[in-house]
Length: 352
Image (cartoon, rainbow, N blue to C red; front, side, top):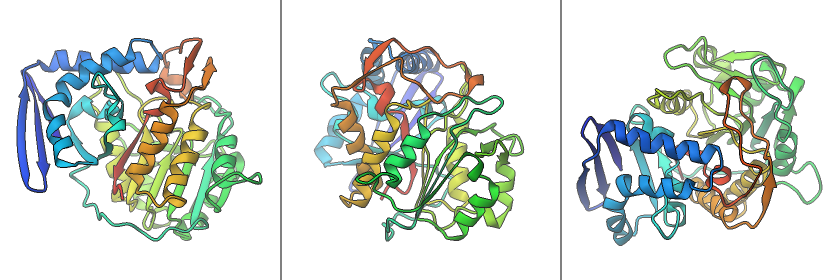
């Protein structure tokens, strides 16, 4: 499914195995952008009217083609998105009865990347996890990361679904990352900040646990830092900086860059994710892949649905925003069913 925003309309193109169709929605690009950023603001502030704003988005971006997708038996929707539409969590669009995640799984498609859609062999031991818990200049501490890695990699008895090696803070430096990449883990889970400046590879970097910046230019040019052989690269604390005049190129650019560097699929977040919710979501996501044999898209969908229907709530949830991003303040108490908690993560590339 391709969606393009032009000055006076939104254009929807859908390709099915035996059918291609097109819909046009008359709405100006300025009005479309307002709908999009109003919805994102409502999500990030955990506002009670987020569902209403997501329904307004659904009316433009999905309602015209939804029934045809249902009738065709579509389960996974691959999205080729234009501009600021890349910022939107399509799983959280609301059709008046349910969120789209309850009907479809989603994956972002980057036309610049040749994607090999195949299911790899998966072993619990062919995995690795890295994380940052300490604060560094320009970046806030990530106190929930240790719990996240413990929950995923099973530091305590009865926990975990992956059995690879992990490293935190000072143990997560360029040398340890290189050693891990040489072993070609199928799944690489990194809980840290990634700062990406479109068109500036030297200024775009992954924050390492020792506080060092690993530039994107170095990742691209150094064979020892290649993601080749990695089926899934997850950046669970990443939030790509977004300005009010952003066009979404940084999100598409990061996913495409990581895939061009060898990763088959990349999962990252659209806003500062919650320390309270992320360990649970990630555990359920990996359990779906490793224990239940689900593809990545369906595993993410099931993990999101589980959280969506959770009765849990948190007070003043801690998020993982970089200090410089000036993220909106959340409300004092909100349930995990709010899209803020479960819909931040998007999957790019090979969803199998």
